[in-house]
Amino acid sequence: MPRKQAVTRPETTARGERLGFRLDEETKDLIERAAHLSRRKVSDFCLTALADTARRTLAEHETLVLSARDRAAFFDALVHPPKPSGRLARALAEHKRRVATRP
Image 1 (cartoon, rainbow, N blue to C red):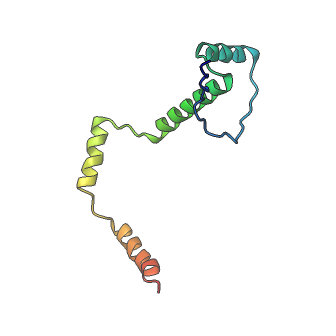
Image 2 (cartoon, rainbow, N blue to C red):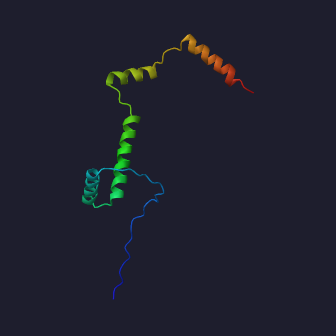
């Protein structure tokens, strides 16, 4: 009689943290239906959806999009930086005196 092969499950990352929240019945049903259609457990479906949304939100806030005019002004300032003002030069000299010359 042939031996059955053991079914192997993909390794998952150990999850030690918890996040709990309450929701209304309609939202719960919506999530459960979507998870079922995706053939996933509700918790896995929610975790993926929350993580994807969090990544998108962070990317939107960490990405700076400039217009063509603003981009040109930014690169021009990098290539041709303005001379420091007298006030900035004095502040730099004071910084060097106080910080850079410490024993």
